[in-house]
Figure 1 (tube, rainbow, N blue to C red):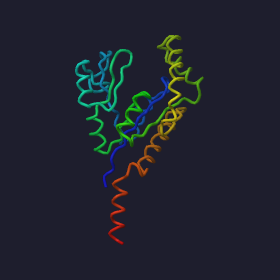
Figure 2 (cartoon, rainbow, N blue to C red):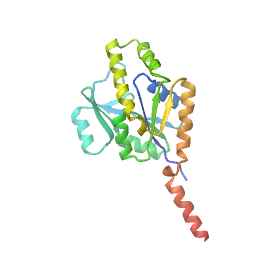
Figure 3 (cartoon, rainbow, N blue to C red):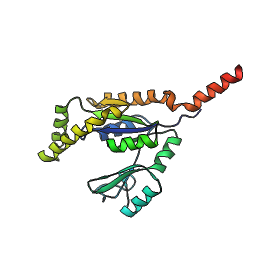
Figure 4 (cartoon, rainbow, N blue to C red):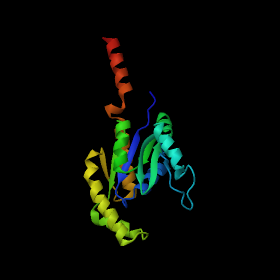
Length: 207
């Protein structure tokens, strides 16, 4: 029986290294696909259509929402961001494990539409390390860093709704740990209804 992919939702505080972790997971293992989001914001220098994002007008985005063509969407800093449903479902049918890197509000919307989605929350070893990583970027002011830490405190209130916590203390170890959790999730009964039904059918035939 062909194994169907799992929709993996990854969230975490700004500065935990989510993006780097996702790229390492895709680079190290061959069964993952990173979902490409759709956005109404303008492309930044170096960004490519279909690679970083699908760039669309606000009218196109709203049309997609009305057609139920997005798994989830949100308005962030005046721009819309969303996950195209067609791409996700196509990859899952191919057996690929699809990774969505989104915020908590979006993650819970995904769980409503995809009850078997796997929700993973990435955390730093401690709050001091989080602040150190944000400062280490060298791209943000003290005010922005303080705002991100304040936002993290709010986001921390929803962590219990996730299936797994992943502490990102060492990139290589964290990548392997996350992959192991995904593989274990494939064996959970909730994600194998066809296998269970087939076993029951065979057992009934033998009675």
